[in-house]
Image 1 (cartoon, rainbow, N blue to C red):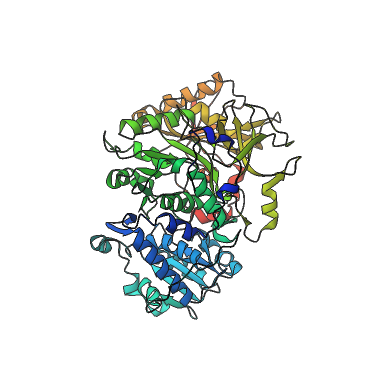
Image 2: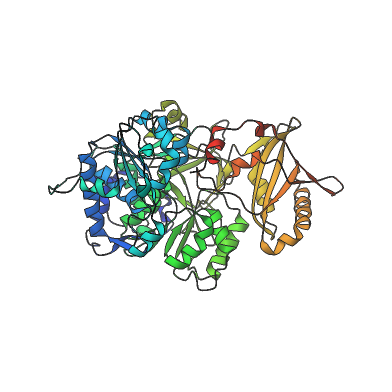
Length: 603
């Protein structure tokens, strides 16, 4: 495809999608685009590298091995893996033979293995060996026939193999084996392809063909399986093409910290960089506390991480010059206030980054991004301009009426990367969409946003992140967070709503900057006064100062939904501005949701 001759930002009206029809399977699109990049590293992993030539050969070898295990077109193979090379290789190998990659979070697996295995008629599981012991009992309840093991050390350099090796295979005993399941380690799996020297062609392209299943975070109910297609992945790449590859080029180093169990991890962090010949530097251990050292060690040009990762990195001991290789620091998924995004950008550039923080906005259901602020001068936390070929509008969430410039309402979009639907859930799929008076189908995001006179979108937060006060008015929790973010002692903050003594009240959680922690009570009083001075009608019921926010093992983002279960160590400020320590008991904390059970599981 030819790159667009439009200027950066002129893509806002690109909605014709015929020109982006790439009639190929994902794997063929990626390998064809790298035909001249054969000696460039596609993957770098713990001291080892895999060139694009070797990557193509491994994809072919894995595809033949899967076929030897009986995997056919349209079969579902479950991948319960971290960000290791075999997660990427397997995705493209399965795509080559027309099979569907079912990416499952190990915590979800432990809660309901039958849903993710039996309901998809899956017979083959590819799993990281460290996950197996805690999932063995659940696996025994499924209809699985074959299990393939991989290790964190499988593709590491010799030095790192010893450091990362898992003793599981050396100590495996008969009690660890489940009857009627055939087991393969990575070597014996690949041995299935030995002697298979025939030319393996990809399955013929079929429009709308499923490529992968990715599960939502379950914040609004049980996790749903988002089915993404070859066309969706390819169209997302074509959207990047229209932006000149978003200024990425062959050999650029892209640090991958978002696991492949999330759609963003595969679409934006694996597939898009591969499409432009970048080197994906894989970090399979998803840990915000190592993010600073990873940036310093791997010297990426591009990275996409949650906002909490950047918070952790900037509170570390990074020095001026440590980030001089970083050109495109990207984030999304977690809401950042305008002031905090500006502060993060300032600090990143002080440490050597070439650009301010880049915000992307999207969802698994949309195949990844639908908006980005990369080409917005003076950017902070805006969602930015629409991606090429994307349409968007702001509507009144109650009436469906399209709103005017700068009015707040629900963000709705049309994107050529949209999901095929939720797996075996037609009702939930239908609930995503609505139709305008012309019969055009729009996807509802469930997010509150606005669009200014320049076509710049802002997304404030989930519409459901709100409560109805005693007067019957909607109070949005992100409005509380925007007020708090203006205090220069606040590192991170979160407002939630809980029912106490029969009344919905706002409850505030804050993380203070290091130099403000010794004056914590003074900061809380100042925050309280800020709410009063800003005319907030429902002053926070109580506050909690915390060391950090935990990361959800489900979404990989800040775990705000678990805050409602915390009852101890709160501070209440009365009308006389006097403080008292209290414990709270919200009604919502009395019922433990399945999602919260998942988060507390040890894997």
